Length: 146
Image 1 (cartoon, one colour):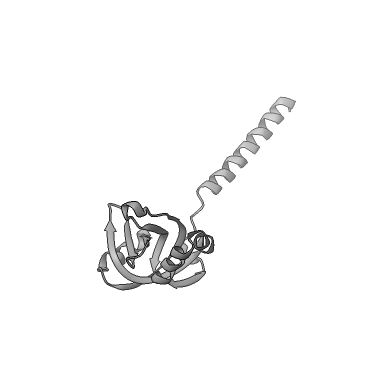
Image 2 (cartoon, helix red, strand yellow):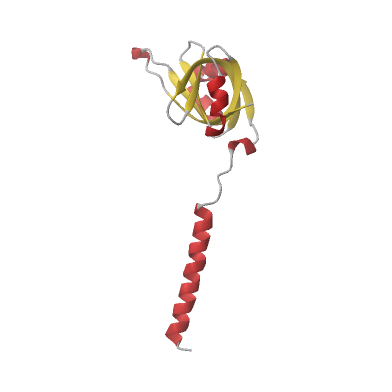
């Protein structure tokens, strides 16, 4: 067999194997948040108090952790494809919990004033603006009901 033909066939074979590996990596299923262990459970008021005392410390404590937060529903925000539940103690921070798509029916059944617990991934916080009397926001995403 010709030397250039062998090199071409080997290169083509390596290209096909590489393409298959890249395809498998790109289209592997995303791990559901329900499969992760809950790192800690906390009451919404206690979490808000931690952020009022020291937001940086609170951020470092919860960052990228799966936490269970229980509290009283203050507001439910619905959009076309998502539902966000807000816990608010009337202090300098609110907790914004974005419900994952598998739990929208349960979220729609909630009413303002209901006591509930959600598990989600903490993603960070946004400082409030005291001059405009806007509270800070503690963001938790991919939430599901406990």
